[in-house]
Amino acid sequence: MSERLKLEEQYRHAQKMEAVGQLAGGLAHDFNNILQGILSYAQIMLDDEHTSGSAREGLLEIKRSAQRAGDLTRQLLTFSRRQIMQPKALDLNEVVDGIARMLTRLLGEQYRVEWIPGKGLHSVFADPGMVEQALMNLGINGRDAMPEGGTLTIETDNVQLDLDYCENHIWAKPGRFVLLSVTDTGQGMDEETRTHIFEPFFTTKAVGKGTGLGLATVYGIVQQHEGMIEVYSEPGHGTTFKIYFPECHPEGVAELGSTIQEVAVQGGSETILLAEDNALVRKLGQDVLQGVGYRVLSAADGQQACKLFEQHRDEICLVILDVVMPRLSGPKILGRIREMAPDVPFLFTSGYGERTVKTQFVHDEGLHMLQKPYAPQRLLLLVRQLLDGDA
Ligand SMILES: Nc1ncnc2c1ncn2[C@@H]1O[C@H](COP(=O)(O)OP(=O)(O)O)[C@@H](O)[C@H]1O
Ligand SMILES: [Mg+2]
Image (cartoon, rainbow, N blue to C red; front, side, top):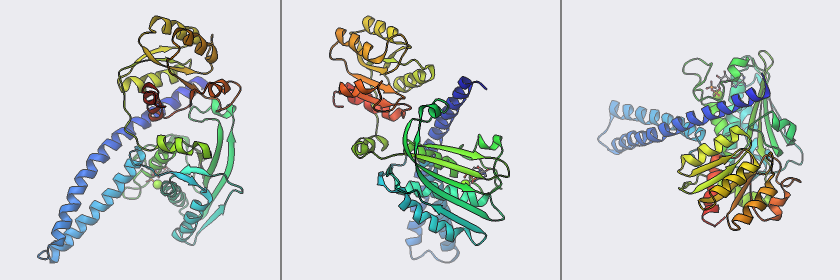
C-alpha cells in the first residue's frame, strides 16, 4: 500500500472513531440521566421503612444493576472525552507502582507481573485516575489473553520520536514522551482483529465476558492526554501496547491544563484564511472551523494565501498559516500580509518541533503556534482567543 493510501486510511479511521465517540457520548449522557432517575427512585423506596421482604430485595437488585450500568456509561463518557479530567504533573512510575501491585494480587498464581520502572523518568501532565484506569484495562486484557497463565510486563521509559517516524504515522508528533508499555505472553491477535480493537463494543470474548469498551476507553484517555497509542501483536506471540504521554514541560503546564480540560468552545461567524498544503489537514481544519460557524477561505500554498488575502482583506479576521508551505514560506507570507493589514492576528501551525530553524521566527515575533496534529478543541479555543484579542 502506498504511503498516501496508508495515511488516508489512518485519517478515515480517526474520523470514524471520532464519530462513534460522539454518538456514544451523546447516548451515554442521556442514559445517565435515565439511570439517575432509576437509582433515585429505588433509593427513595428503600429509605421507606414500610418497604420490606422481597420488595426490598428486588429494589436492591435494581439499584445494583443501575450502578453497574452507571459504570458502563462512565467508561463510554471517558471514551467520548466528555469526562472532565484533572491532570497534574505526575511521576508515572508512582502511579504504575500502585497498579502493578494491585495487578499482582488480582491476577492470581499462574501469572507473573514484571514491573520495570524507567530510570530518571521525566514527568508527564496527566490525570492519575485515568492512567490507572488505562493500565488496569490493559492488564486485564493481558490476563484474558493468557488463560493458561503467563507474564505481564509493565515498563516505563523516556523516548524521543523523530520526524521519520512521524511521517509514517499521521497521529504521531515529534517530541519527547514518556512511554508506558504493557506486554503479555498470550495468544496475540491477527491483523483483522488488530484493526478493530479500539472500536467501542468490539470484542472477541464470549457474551457476558467482554464489553468491548476496555480499549475504546484507553483510546479516549490517551486522546485526552494528547498522547498516542500503538499495538504490536502476532497470533501466538503475545501483545505489546505502547502508550506515549507527552513529557511535561514546567512552563507548558498552565497552558496545557486550560486546553485539555473540557471547555465550552465558542464558535463565531468571522472569516478566517486557512493556508495549509496538506489536503487532509486542510480539510480537517476547514470542517472543524466551519462546523462552529466560521467562514473559511482556504489556500493550498503560500502564493494562493497571499492572493486570497488581497482579495478579501476587509473580511479576513484571522490568518492560520502552516509554517512550511510550497511556493512561499511562512515568514514571507507573514511579511506580505502585514504590509496589507498590520493588525490581523496570525496563528501558525507546524508539524516540526516547537523551536526548530523553521519555526524559530514564530517565537521571535511573539506569535502563536499550534503543533500538529492538533486537537480540534485546541484549534477552536486558540482561534476564539485570537479573534477576541485575549490570547
Ligand atoms: N492483550 C491482548 N491480547 C490479545 N487480544 C487482545 C488483547 N487486548 C485486547 N485484545 C482484543 O481486543 C478486543 C477488545 O478489547 P477490549 O476493548 O478491552 O474489550 P473486551 O476486553 O471487553 O473484549 C478483545 O476482545 C480482544 O479480542
Ligand atoms: Mg478488555
